[in-house]
Image 1 (cartoon, rainbow, N blue to C red):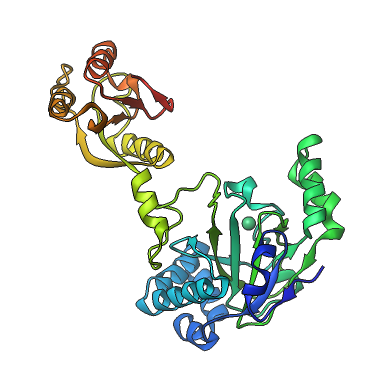
Image 2: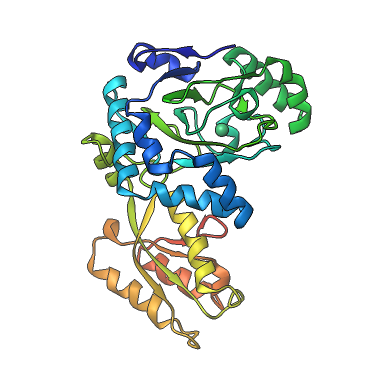
Length: 344
Ligand SMILES: [Fe+2]
């Protein structure tokens, strides 16, 4: 299986969900080289030998923060939008990957196994020359579908299904200055890199309507900032405001505010809730003066406009009965983030 090279993605828009394509980058590759350096592999190897592998990755992200890269990334997105002639949402920050000599960059997988959805299309861009062992390997759509079924039915481990699919996986070597697309119906991954130098690439995903993006969230993991489209305004309507509060008493007093906020943050992302006010209940006061004040303040609003309150866990209260009752009587939703539960 060899990916098909196309001049313009517009001719294959619907096939992007089942096949893989390559096309010329819509920006000059020299501009990317200018940002990341002509001797990128050597630079990365030097950082790794002097510091650590994560410092080498950090170097790439520091370059990606530059206005030059941001401009180029936006140009790529705008060109893709023009090519596809269709709205899409995209990951706001591309992922940079280094495949070190002697290592794999990832098991064979499909992206919905790692939390992405069927609407997502990967755009993969190499920054260094590729060889058979330092590029992405892929299976075609039919073989992928057959394997997906087998993995579930036979409850296969990674090494078991990789053995089954091994002779149906093919390396995709594309010239610098090109990008490659693949999707959730294409099994992909890498093999051990036999080169003496690392392979460096970056990639990002886009998703067209119906925006099925798995466990990811629109407005956070995928955005449409640079497009003047309906996507953003629709999303704004969907996102709901809430209040969040952390505690210092109760059975979870050992959980820091930072940890409580992280639990609350994850919950809000998943429920598309946007914290409007974040508070921390007063120390040493188990009569909860602050959260009760918040409940009172909501009384001036219509029931439908009253903001829900999100807490890390009901275990944050010495006794949750009073506060649940109070919220319930006042028409305020109270969420327990840890248990993923609406308490009232
Ligand atoms: Fe992947």
